[in-house]
Length: 215
Image (cartoon, rainbow, N blue to C red; front, top):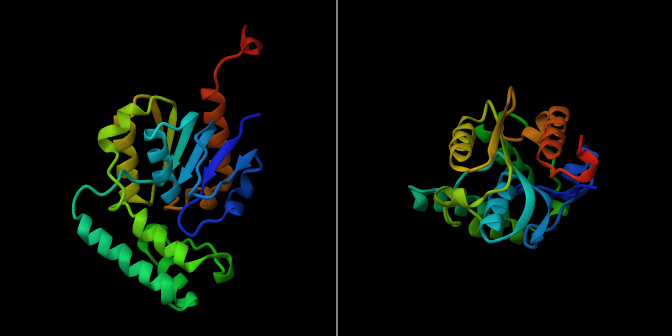
């Protein structure tokens, strides 16, 4: 059976993937397995998935959702922005912090409830600092190295990441694009049924042929 190694985004939880009702392994983002069947990464998890693949992780295929290629210009400004959020995650009042985080235009008004007790604030601040798109090296120049089938997904209302997705698919040797109409950044949870169906379709289409598949 195909196992999906699913990497959640910032402020994500392994349980976020329960809606898939598939065989899912949701590891700690600090300990991504080096091999597997399908590697699925959303947002921050998508960035880390790309870096894992470029670092030699071996998967049969990959699904990247609402992820960018890294910051190539104005890196200092992005680092300063993420440092501001990191300090708030270390010391800010939780309710106000969640309100402001979810109010960012990228999320298109869609919010996911998050309880402070489920997180280590210092770890969240570390992620913002060390895994910022401006802290990790940009990947566009190396995407040609990822030869496995890749499905890149973005929401139609998430203009920045639609542009990133289109650019990525042009640079990858074996990739296809799905723009989820009506969704913003949190595609899997805005359109769970459509997302799960597209995921199953991609995995089935990119699965290697076996003797049982012979005509």
